[in-house]
Length: 239
Image (cartoon, rainbow, N blue to C red; front, side, top):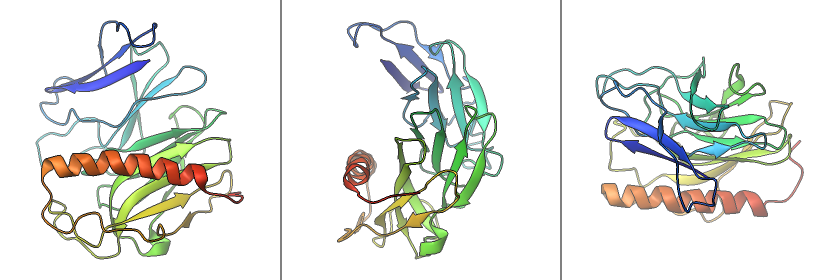
């Protein structure tokens, strides 16, 4: 079991070999000298034991300024050391944490909000050393603004990304969240770079009034669960 968390200006991951009863030392994932930007996405572990932590950028400094690339921190030694694997075509610093889905063959699907708030997916077959098929998965549906991407993968040719999105330009990316945000599951097969994105039936608006930080936190948790459930029950071939 891996537990990863921010700690003021840095981020650390620790491992438990007894089901979470005890945890070992926490090893740093992000640069502790960043000063800001310690938040990161959820840790994921591949079938071969490789550990991944996605991030909107390696280091945000100064706060509110331009950022680097969207990255995946990758560890092959049980979280003791971490390599930074940037997505070349991305622009970091978006408001949402990226999400990683891992297929059974080790394929990495990184779903992220780009610096321009559009939602993208990039694919890697070598643990993030190189990325391919990086594309705007909301473009075909007219999505120009997104939040809270959530990725999941299973068989090598099956993956999905759910996210909140709107076709209405939000302008300022700060809260409150536009009431036109809806949930959108996108399915992406491999190797063909074909994406189908559609609005979830009877999708409710994400928010209809100014959102507090606590409400935003709750929205992330609820959407994560709903997104994964939606993917599990979906039927039909994706390739």
